[in-house]
Image: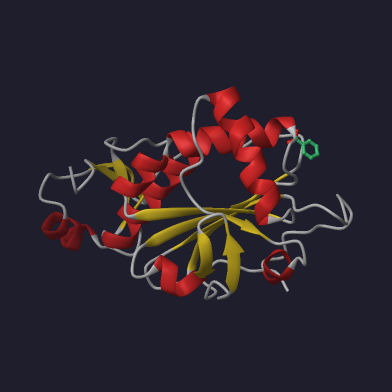
Length: 211
Ligand code: BEZ
């Protein structure tokens, strides 16, 4: 069963490179990003894990914990971490789940048999403070993810959770945002004291309210 937006992220207990993790307890009241990679000791995955580690501080600033996963063992992850540091200069600084029996991979539908029946695809789940899934992404094995994009998405998710706004195409933190159509013009005047511009009656832009 696929894990969909708005679902409670399935809870699990798993062995990781940083000890046993009970997912909901480990996540606490903050945000979490859970992402799978297909296989240890493979080239794209090595670059991805290094890129993720480089941004851990940025995710932490946003109260978001990171956790990786593949169907390799914790022991394999630990051996691979040396290569990731060698190649990218970044030490893996978040737990990586060892899931050789595919318990978590199956729970989150991370194995897509028509792509590969042995490896996880590149899945991403961002989970909010309420334990609900706020974002899912799926990339194939041959395409590495952009972790700056995941930070950008997290900024949008956190902003739109707190204000009646949406973020336009290619938006970056600090840029103008869209007032959601459910807010009337009169209410928008009160809610957005910096004012707004109506490009169309349904497309009203305002400076980012929390900046
Ligand atoms: C890679 O990380 O380069 C990779 C992993 C599995 C299949 C293909 C590529």
